[in-house]
Length: 284
Image (cartoon, rainbow, N blue to C red; front, top):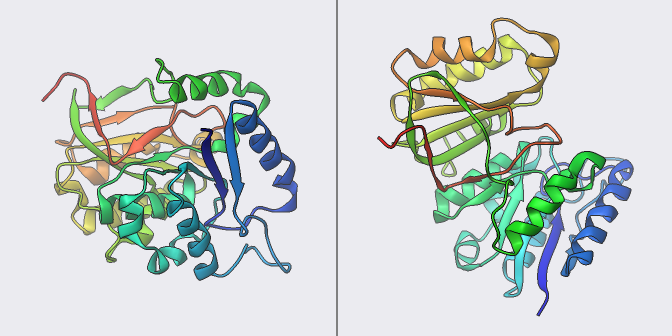
């Protein structure tokens, strides 16, 4: 029996300029033996940024989760609209499904809500990366993962900028998008976790604002460590102070902080399982 994969867009709809890329991904998945199902809410509609109403997008996602043959759900979108679908999701059905959700950026909201409501893991990774010309290693790594072989897809290098080890379940993702869950029932329990933070847009003032909010809602007193991914706009512009300095300033001197250049919005980024355990450095 073929493994089944779905292509979805729970955040902003894909613009027409992304259609060819989505078709290339569909072709690749079929070539490696997967049956591919497309969301009816995939592309922008009616001159708007949306591929459907929040309820419509949620119903499409639940259609995939309720399919007993579905293995992988790849969300190809990003933007701002993903958290709008959360009230319409059936988390009991999601918890009972074998399907694994993959997405990044604004899909941080859905990924962390799934963990908060069901305890299940999802993958922070943009499947469109598999279609880029430099993505051959990712395509091979993805195939190896599917076949149960050793894979580089979820391996990444890191260095500590404060402390020497951390261990716990990973939560988080895009910092701005994660904070949209603050104060809601979809906010994950931060106690004893490793908090992953990364960003695409935003310079030092915007990142400082987000870090301040995390501190003010008590997160840095709960987590066991912080893993910083890429912060593209800051890095490309040379915005100062850098994210390492800001993280140390707002999180304090006692919490372990590590940095990786291999998780985030770059097209060569690796994946990471949100809701799964991670050990960096020696075991605590």
